[in-house]
Length: 470
Image (tube, rainbow, N blue to C red):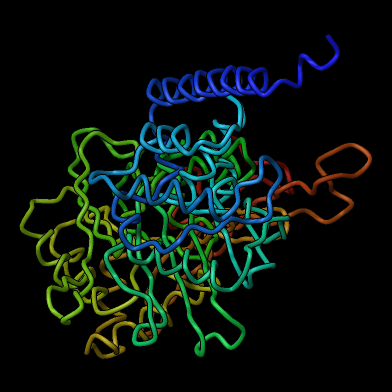
């Protein structure tokens, strides 16, 4: 009969069957979620949820996740105690009554997990293994860095309100607060993200958010060489610097790759050596079996409980370190580090911000003065404690270990004398036939014979521009 399919009972039966199919599909998603681990890269720690406000979405492709669905799932998840897991989010999505289908439910589950317990609209960017930094300059201005410099991406927030809500939530996950009384905050959250946020009126045009993506793996020297970050000539010298236990600093600008290189170098240490790492925020991940990490702690809301790097250096000296490493020398801890390296703790070092290897002495002098040391004392201590400076450059072509210099006293002043320098070849000397990416050419500096003698290498550099042997 023509009208039979329109009978109300027929509609009810079809609706019930559709509901059963959707429920079974959603339950399949829930079971699928239960069987796979919750990717730590998609969350920022259990504490992140307690501080969040109503979830907000971003302009992305895929199933429409309106505010009502997000808020409904959020309330269902937060109604129970305990960490937010994919299983709980999947169950909440399944129980929302929305007919999204199996694939739609899985997408919704991932999106809502990011909104509740991750980086929100930035989550997909953080999953890219090549991304090192994410910058949000405005709701509609998001940039990332894959190693070759910042580039814009087609990701946006709904509004300034949603951007600020994410910033507040991420900072709260790190145990601090972001509000009018604390408008500039820097924290570390799981699984190794460094988050820096600035609120108006310090930022004149709205909330600013910067996220450093800490990758939980270290690279071998061979991998850095294959990536074009380390020339073969540099590679052998770096191995010898570690093997001969020279004191060293890795210098470079922000984001140049100092921490990555330092982690790689520490992985070259002998397995029996006891490495004690001191960091403001734990970022070093050396591939080494005997590593102890001490991490600074900020003061609480009452201004108490802080433990700075200066105190951590003192504590590390009581731990019988084989090598003492300060992740970043940027304050009073430089005094303790120099003193420690002058008391028999050879082979130690750290990183320092500087525009070039030649600028490191001025940087050390400035930090030493802040620590109450005279410039003369800094020069004497540094010349005795440090043997080499390894400089990392960040150019258009990417990151490059560009110079190794020798620390020395020259007429009573601290100086870094170039020993080995690597620079891109002129356009006529490109490494690819017919032009292409410029080759990297090493050259010996005035301090090369001295450094080569200490490392057991040939003090005579090869003639011409021929590549040095690895």
